[in-house]
Image 1 (cartoon, rainbow, N blue to C red):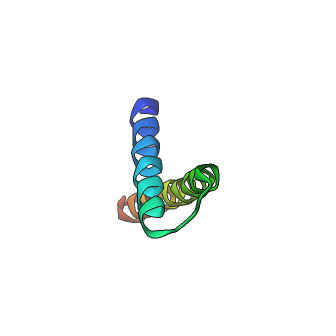
Image 2 (image 1 turned 45 degrees about the vertical axis):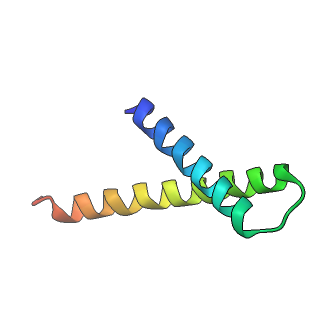
Length: 61
């Protein structure tokens, strides 16, 4: 499961990086990379939290 988590984080980071690079006019790629890592972290942790909340609500216990 760790491998899948890492691959999802990498794909999210790359997607955010190129999206930000395309829409924002920033000369420093390091700032874009930092923003993309931060956004992918927030999106990943939020989606894991919502998925866990959804699964526990669905289970009959």
